[in-house]
Image 1 (cartoon, rainbow, N blue to C red):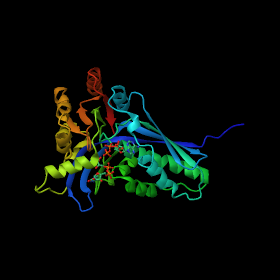
Image 2 (cartoon, rainbow, N blue to C red; image 1 turned 180 degrees about the vertical axis):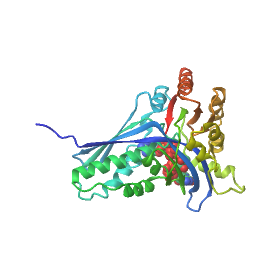
Image 3 (cartoon, rainbow, N blue to C red; image 1 turned 90 degrees about the vertical axis):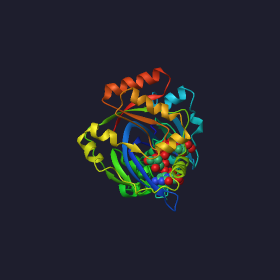
Image 4 (spheres, protein in one colour; image 1 turned 45 degrees about the vertical axis):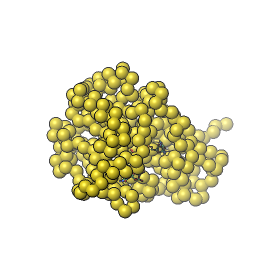
Length: 315
Ligand SMILES: C[C@](O)(CO)[C@H](O)COP(=O)(O)OP(=O)(O)OC[C@H]1O[C@@H](n2ccc(N)nc2=O)[C@H](O)[C@@H]1O
Ligand SMILES: Nc1ncnc2c1ncn2[C@@H]1O[C@H](COP(=O)(O)OP(=O)(O)OP(=O)(O)O)[C@@H](O)[C@H]1O
């Protein structure tokens, strides 16, 4: 007798924000942003399997050699801290899809193979949500015989799950406006070579935004916008021109909450990086290197000194 494994798998990338400007706080607690999102070659994988039960069970594992895996090996992170219940973004994503397939009976098992640091500013949870949307959509359609949700519906569900989830669904490079969920594709002429350096602790995204508001209290904050020259320079693959324009408004706030990040940022200058910046709300730091060999060498040197570090390509 053969058993048919009813499983579907999907991947979604972690991200860095090559440029990130945030406006003043809005009445709803969010901030309007201008974000140049760029996917990195460190990705999350979600495998959705149909079960006989009726709940959603979650198993989380670290991808061998990933930044997350290095953090676990260094003893600075434990997978036990990742929620496996309704607070997990992949579970929320799965639920959002299942609501659209009301006739489907059965439970779900989600296996999440994580590569991206947790609460690291790289949108790991958002990538899990995006991958779960796709995997559960395909599984539900297969099992129910109904048509799969189209991309417009998936994008709508993604926006309801978090500001970074639509980008995780789209991948590549994109400019995000509004809360970051409104996207248009951006051109990157030559992939960037980054070294990502993980930190010993995570930073809470709302806490970093709150610190930004505190640091800017009383100041006149301009509406968020990308420098006009940045996109054309990146599209041409002109890193010499683009690198000095890279900036993250959340970096001073992340540094205020985690002052030791100044040291991690300084590692880039010592290594001849073209730019170094905190990724999103931090604390992961991204160094932009001039080529794959330079990136691999820096990552190797940092790992030899016990720092979780990884050379990646973006996008
Ligand atoms: C820092 C970034 O990762 C940069 O891409 C994002 O702005 C954060 O995206 P995210 O984690 O998907 O954010 P959400 O889960 O939607 O929101 C978490 C919290 O971050 C703050 N938040 C988020 C996005 C935004 N444009 N303004 C905000 O003020 C709010 O306090 C919100 O309650
Ligand atoms: N699938 C998930 N993986 C990791 N954390 C999750 C997940 N679902 C929910 N969380 C919760 O969300 C918090 C932030 O996780 P996440 O790794 O997405 O942060 P982040 O990468 O800094 O987010 P962002 O860059 O979007 O601000 C975690 O501390 C955890 O409690």
